[in-house]
Image 1 (cartoon, rainbow, N blue to C red):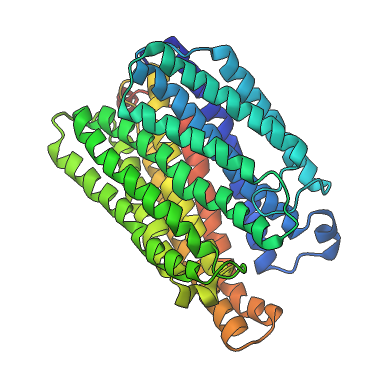
Image 2 (image 1 turned 60 degrees about the horizontal axis):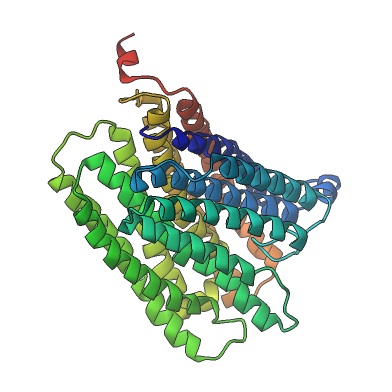
Length: 443
């Protein structure tokens, strides 16, 4: 760790990891709802819709904390200066955590806006906006004060500004439901496939450069290409969400064509990563971090690229939209693109913040492979359940509960895989909090 203010990132990581564990625990409860018949007395107290809101909002919260912590670690090294204010970073962390916990508790008592993923009540939305503005001010002032601009800094700042602006469109309600859902997708889709992709590209490029020793201009050259493609396909690809909400028919063409192009930048990222491996001129000190980087690129391509491409073609999406096929795509894409990105950043930065040059990665490897294997199984079983659901409900025209009966076996397998995923995650979290130098292998 080169700068004292980078230490603040540790507390963002430390806050994010327990939230990730809680998200998975709630996810297992959701799987149990599909697998078993839950007594009505329990459903009355803790309904499925509340559990789903907690599960998805925990995802957003822990991933944002990971991105923000990663940004606070990267910016000092990129600008070659201390952060503008660690006090503001502490204020922002506490404000977001208090807001997040308040929202989650509020869901239990029915305090929600009702829109999936954006259930946080409007009063708390303003606190989130204040936290985002404080974050942008702190990062922006650090860059302006240092006057040492790089492409990684610019991409990261652009992604963060984009992320904050898009959140504003999800705050108001619109009387026309088509317009309301139109802007809802601006937040959901353009966050994930626009703003978050910019943040991912910049963090990925930074870690790749530091980890492999590849020259900056090599990483930044491809970064420009990937940013352009991500924006081009990500923005126009939003159209695949407009198929069935009453938007004009031309979105079928725009959404279908540009959604098909979305895997291209991800594929470039995979080739780019392999190119860096061949060209690197120094030994990779911590191979587990490198494994996370490769895993992030590969599962990003499979979950967001291949699954996304197949699922968003209009002819297929007509039957699978909103089914468990969507859930399969969402789990693989979020885990591959963003969960692994955050864990890669944690494994890169946390040893350095503890003064460990080379860490013992035996437990970490078990955690990584357990999580990735379990997630691949979950992706497949969600997909099988979704195909059954689509065929029974939308081809045969049978009832919702009839389809649920045929899906139960596959949701049970999904739940079993989820238990293994939780075991891998707990191993990973324990490993990150108790990292040891590699020499501990011999003791």
